[in-house]
Amino acid sequence: MTARRQHVLERALRILRRTLLTVFGVQLALAIGMSLVDSYRRRGKKPKPFPVTPPRTVPVGEGTVTTYTFGKDLYEDMLAAIAGAKKQVLFETYIWKGDAVGERFKRALVDAAARGVDVYCIYDGFANLVVSPRFKRFPPSLKVLRYPVYGAGWRFFDLSRYGRDHRKVLVVDDEVGFVGGYNIGAAYETEWRDTHVRVTGPGVWDLKRAFADFWNQQRRRRIGHSERPLLLETASTWEPMIRFQRNSPRMWMFPIRGMYLEAINRASHKIWITQAYFLPDQQFVDALKDAARRGVDVRLLVPLKSNHIVADWISRGYFSQLLEAGVRIFRFKDAMVHAKTATVDGTWSTVGTANIDRLSLQGNYEINVEVIDGALAKTLEEIHLVDESNSIELTRGEWEARDLHRRFTESLLQPLRPLL
Image 1 (cartoon, rainbow, N blue to C red):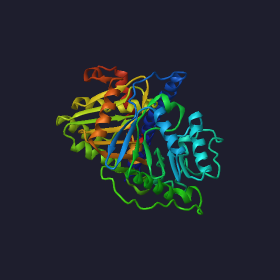
Image 2 (image 1 turned 90 degrees about the vertical axis):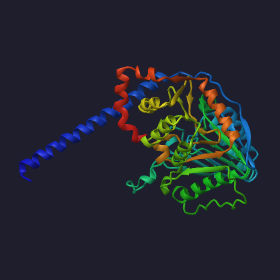
Image 3 (image 1 turned 45 degrees about the vertical axis):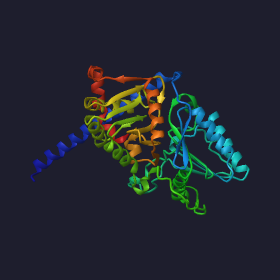
């Protein structure tokens, strides 16, 4: 290669790098600007009341599953379960606010430990950076694992160490387990529309095992080499109608995405999904489009305005192809819908912590319960219809008539999809 050609090539590469940095910088600046403006507009505004479905219990196998769609109902039952604990409490949450609700849970856990119950707690350090350090001081009677803000250490190249602990789990003794989308805080108690389930019966053992596996994997690096492992007895029975799917980035295991795709690809009648943040990969979008084109009633319910405006705008980039394929899109108004649920063909259901986005399906520690049961599927369908009554359906004509600046913003933000 001549010196002149090499000079031209180097100059072209410099121009390319500057162009890419400029484009990415514009996208990032736009995202930050949108978030700041949205945060300013939300100051002092309170969500409006929204319809909820009372807790409903259905028998599943040798146990039961209870659905919750209102935080106050859920928190009362969670606190009652902790108050009734005799041997052990396993508590894990992504966000644990230091407000009145957070204090109630902290006090309940401390009281349980004071009467001799073994209490284990896990919370995510990054998600609680803004929580007062004073709130995060716990008495030695509680075994507390703070999942670190930065967990890679010197192994910054190891992508498996960057996942957040996004799970929300409570298990009391061998009797009852809770899992779903609810974090712990006053806003979630009354202002957010979310979904959680309470499980009894043999299925509780699998939820206990999920907690114990995470605790034992993290305990030495997060607590100390002297910390003893959390040992469980082997469950004597299986519950074939209930399975807990766990994403574990340290082990490069992400079964929740596969669980969704298998159910979608097998659907013959209906697929009803509720998601707080819908940012799937193209294969996931194609699976929904294929289902709609073969006559399946595919419905997607998302927030009209979520608490993350950038995620909303990026999510809208999928709407054109979904609507064209026949997918019906409903947008929940006046409050944040944070649920992560789906039901297929009146038989299969899932409720859990995983959003349909890259961070949840290929990055974070997540857990979803998968249930094969007609009664639970019917309950979740009824919940979905109640949510639809508080939603605005987006029509294809309305979407195609949107302003040019909206189309431009969606296109400009599209490259940020892999980051969310």
